[in-house]
Image (cartoon, helix red, strand yellow):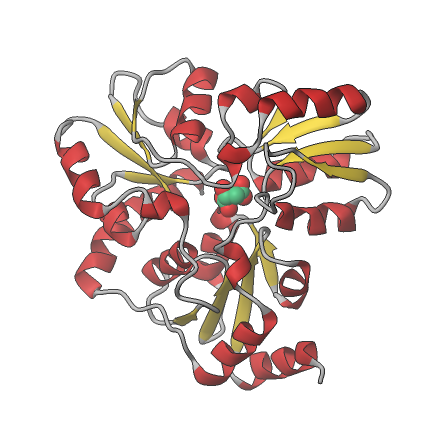
Length: 307
Ligand code: MLT
């Protein structure tokens, strides 16, 4: 049967919209109404008119939509689709850390739970982190978490010290600098582009570092014919659509036999689960109202600063 046609029909019947992240498989991106990074998906989630929003991504992204747009029914294909950054920043420990620095500004990556957002001052994503940190007065101490690599990259870029939470993305930290150097030697004509969640040992070889939207823009505009890409492979789908003429090479991990460049959480989603979610309105993201209102403060600040 034609699952794409079924999903399209269900969207109309249920007055639903599908928002998909760039790290999802190509078939999911193609059935979505809007495809983008976490910042774009949060913005679209706030603006869309339909009653039901299916967020094909990981659960914290759907939570952000629910926090910003609570009257909508927000669905995910799989409630188990978490994130190593979320898992590595449990609320109790994060709170204890935050309480050690009562005067600091808690700048928190959107890759965090609603509970952690509720004890943060401002949320950032990889595409707006610089703008948001630059808006914080220089004399204020910054607590940056949960992704230490994004924080360290930004700190270097802005010449400003942060206090770091010790978190990392389990996909991006596996890119291997030694093997990357070998790959660059084999492809001296390739442009190396990388996501700031990668370790600094890898980032030092990248000529462009940025969010998926920034990397996509680079592939679109840079006349080069070859790119080595250090981020999750889902983004290759849009890159190849925009530039069918270029060769995209995955940045290497140490164990060449594994499929470590795929996020295991993003890849839990599939077309069958999307269809089922639209049919049954399950799984639905629900948040305690008091928690939602607290978490909304830091997300609203992100929206205000970037608008
Ligand atoms: C996000 O913001 O969605 C993730 O950091 C990946 C990206 O850079 O887009």
